[in-house]
Image 1 (cartoon, one colour):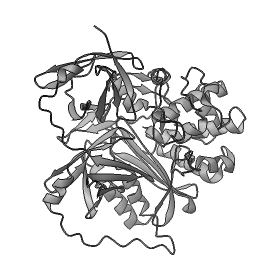
Image 2 (cartoon, rainbow, N blue to C red; image 1 turned 180 degrees about the vertical axis):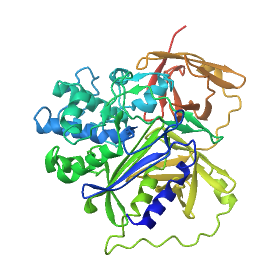
Image 3 (cartoon, rainbow, N blue to C red; image 1 turned 30 degrees about the horizontal axis):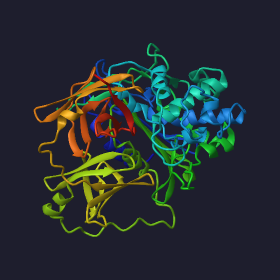
Image 4 (cartoon, rainbow, N blue to C red; image 1 turned 60 degrees about the vertical axis):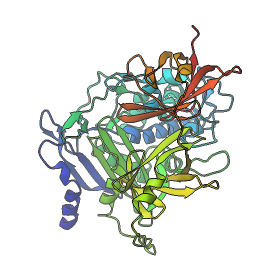
Length: 537
């Protein structure tokens, strides 16, 4: 590696060279060989231990590609078929009234409600609580309905890969960790990689995870989680270099499996997706095809980024939580990747005439997507628009990108009835929201919503009362919340950040033929329409 490039690389990570900070390890692999590896910062702040190329990190959702590989190996061995109806392997799952296949799980088109963070938050898991594989399966097996008919939509949900891990266990007759060790990790020489399926397990060379505090300090990020399939593979950059080599040598699975792993799914209407087997495909950088996937859990944030045409990969493993892992990986890649011959960068946007604060403020408000039952808020502060709390940067007058996620676009428009609307474009998907008119809350009869409500799919009760002009929801473990009305019989319920995520739900009350409130449905964080029933008396 050229000295100037090495200096540029170190500059990208200079924030993690100051004393007392966690950091990250990275490796660049080309044609199956390591051409650069660096580590920055501390693996353990309390014991002042430095990160190195042997430090082990939780891979978060990068674990999913290994789960997909395990399923494809079982399909090769005729232990299952990707077309199998999931109930063939998991008969205790409820009947959802439509076929649900392994293909649906692999490509996130199942309609399953998401366990993390959605169901766990609603079930009142606290961040320090132990979350086992059995806990996650129990929550999933208790869900009687889906978010949508399998094959109708794409919705990323950890639940899919949790069930794939369980299917792997039943089809192979082995523990998931044992199967993956014997069939994938050991053959590839991933000697320090380990699937964390017991909270008492020792993980040699494990880096500790951290959160940044608002005042500049670092906080421990407890991770008491042994959920399999969707996360909880621990590995070092050396391990990941050996995994990357398999995309070239196809030592495990052969070229057909590698092709399957990188082949995206599609919806029933033949719409092609960008999600393959634990990998996101279909985008480009500097004209080159990109295959990638990020992962974050607890105080870890990682990214696996490869350029198949160049046989080049960048793998970054951080031991502190952050959102911009893809952007950081692309910055590293730019030190090794030139523009593809014949490709030219799109011209930069024309200099933008400053958008007046008056125009920006006109876009502020609450927006609603009736399909996903999601509410999003646009605010304007100091001449900057924020969407769901994230700062937006204008590209042209009505198109913005996220400052921390420039690949995601937000387009503002006016509907046919002149209502403000917005479209969020990310990973080949478009979600459309329309602004909701302000709701008058004067003389709103809140007492009619009071009562105790039971959720059979969570086996818990929420108690709702009306006082001092607002509703109060009391729960078993979490602090009380005060939902605010957004439209008729619907309330927006903002929770304090839980399980590392800000939590917001929509409560939609339903009425019987006499107009009496009989219950409500909760939507949010990968969940649509989870039912609470009003208890009598």
